[in-house]
Each structure stands twice: as structure tokens, then as C-alpha cells.
Image: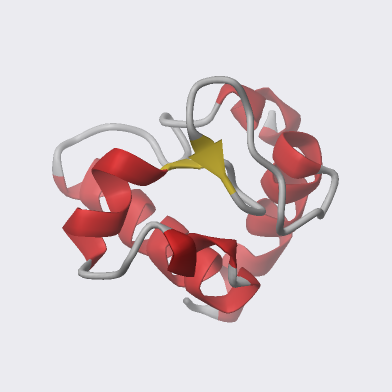
Length: 86
């Protein structure tokens, strides 16, 4: 991930998980960025358990942002905490 994206990822990860890599919500979203494990782990070619690793979670989060941008969506449109970036 390019360094210019780090502030956005820090803000969203704090809002989503409080920077707790072991966080899980009631919908099956996991890790720092609260990624939907059943969707994004297979997309990224990693195990769902790997999403608890902070580096892997951020790497997959970057893939999600790239996926959204390529489809014409705004960055971080997948996250409920994206409002912290406005």
C-alpha cells in the first residue's frame, strides 16, 4: 500500500476495531479493518484465520480498496466507519 494511504487506513482501522487485531463482530467481520472473512479471504487467496494477522488484514484491505476503485466506487465504501475520512 502506498504511504499516502496510511492515514486513511489508520483512521478506519481505529474506528472499526479500536486497533484490536483479534476483533470479531456479529456479522463475521474480523481483524483491524473488520473485513468480511467469508468474502475477502477467498478473494485474496488467504485463510479466514490469516485475517487476524494485522499485516495480512491491511494487505487484504488494500486489495478491497483497489477492487472498489476499479469498479468505480469510492475508496472505503465497504466500511461503515468511512465517515471518519470526511
